Image (cartoon, rainbow, N blue to C red; front, side):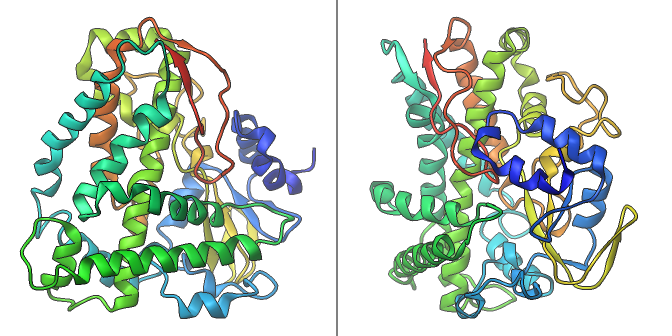
Length: 403
């Protein structure tokens, strides 16, 4: 088939269970121009170089016509989160968001929640015995990160039904679907971000002047050297953290369970040696990552692997392809918990390296460590399982298992 249809074929829902043969085709093609005018990049070294190149923008407002979104003026009115901005604004907002989350100002934040993660994981696992059939997503992979991110941010866990719908709409608006007018999805995404932003800002404002150990409280009471967030910045930042703080980890845990059940030799190895857990999570981030594609925009004409890419056109990086590049990884399509040379792209690279990576690693290690002893006699009831629609945030929608 023609390489200029690769993006259409990758994003076709029929490809969701196994996009990796298409990624191999992409790597063979090099930089592939698509019928919609965008460019696909799937090789490891090119992706790493581009993620570190300041000439490639994360801000979609830098797209040229006709790639510029029809409602971009509305996007400009709604402050983007730092993940969709470039330096210096990205650095300022990310630094403000990091202040109550990690070093240097809050070096103990993740360690302090370690026991909480262990407790939540234990409670979820204890609820499983006696239930012959479970859905790994609904019964385990979703409740764990949602509970943790609510605890960190200071969002009432009982409000989960309220923000779950907003979160699903936001994720849907980020999907890549060539040949489809994204206007309606993106408008719905803006409305969901606005509602979630108002909800989170209201929570934070009620804590102004009051002590507390959650991040929303810190955002309004401990501004730091960059000053306070504006209301729009706080809404965008808190929304990003709440959505990204659980959506990707759900995929990571679910993909992990599915992969271990498909590779019983590796599951047995992990059960016999729990010390392999940290490396197992890194291998899962390489082999079955939760995020498959990233969109960028050249600020000037670029040469990528001998292909001239014009200014302002969308460039779609496929880090899930890069992490299976045989020019970087030996035997890349083999799932190997003992792999040591494993500088995968599961958390991206460069200035947008995943903000929540330490937390996601901790949650995945706790989840797989608690579940792996119980998976020895488990049976997949559907393989492949039903997948979520998104090709960007790829993972099973449900994972029915017989224990």
